[in-house]
Amino acid sequence: MTRRPPLYKTNHAREWFHNARKENRGSDDDFDKRRVTTIRTKRALYWASTGFAALALAAIGAADLTRLRDVIAGVAHLGYPAYFATIIGVWKLLAVATMLAPGLPRLKEWAYAGLFFVVSSAAISHAISGDTAGVAALPLMILGIVLTSWVLQPARRAAVAAKPSKSTSIPSEARA
Image 1 (cartoon, rainbow, N blue to C red):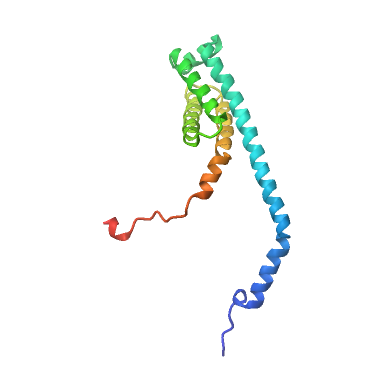
Image 2: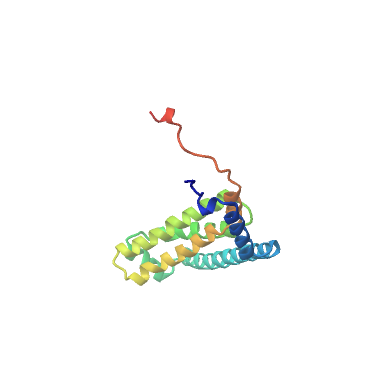
């Protein structure tokens, strides 16, 4: 008794699968239009998230620098000295300027990393000091917008796409 190959290994099944994929995908022109739309959508989401994050962080940084009474009271409530608001305000404004500047990919990575630490630390500080969940959630929402901007950066997407796929595993001889 001869064994029949599985259905997916027969030429007929391969042709059917290939044609079905081609029909579902549409023509190559449709594929290019979808790709352009995706790129436009990502670009629009990047600029919307970057603009909103820059606006929010610039407003908060300016309030920190002007040492408004409410800001100083909030910083004191969290247990930090008053000059801490000035330091954080300067760094926030510098990060916003770097986010909006063209080019500077490495500096932008540092700016996004700094914003991640500052904003996540703000959420943790609010949670630890006994503030309500809504007060602690506001920095997390800003953090989500900053992370969206970071993920959708055009320069970052190009750098990630251009990376060669090398194996980073350690050879067995070097593991000993």
